[in-house]
Image (cartoon, rainbow, N blue to C red; front, side):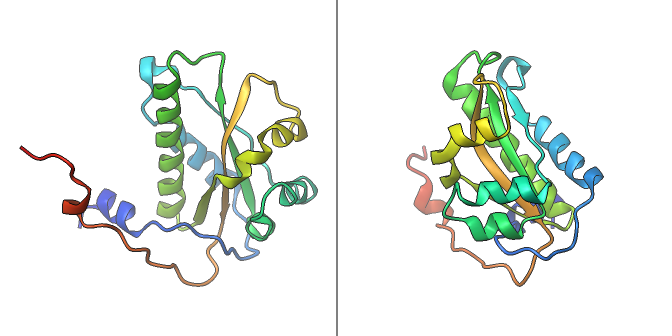
Length: 168
């Protein structure tokens, strides 16, 4: 099978992690993959925080109903959009989605598990302040990363003919 398609079809949202550490080099490779996402005018609006300190990571736990995921992850990667470089709200937010998908696929290809946490956005302001970041940075997601514990669930997908709304 095609390796890119294989990665897309086999990637899963992983919410249970082992205690095995994740190297800094691996995390930087995941971030680098994110930076290769397409962006309008090549403005590259993404910015990242790298959170591995256990005490700081623990402070994230109270900011989401997914505290268990945060607690077991070895690395948290909050992903921000830099509002100072944006030129089009929709286009720039689409770029962030592509960036996050690249990062999830990179983690998977490197043998790690990862999950895109979106519910934590309700605490976006608290996270920005916790990290002492500028108000020009708006939280888009937190990616939790670690070595997979357990097996992957296989979610169902709609058939292609169910999602095509026009074909002529």
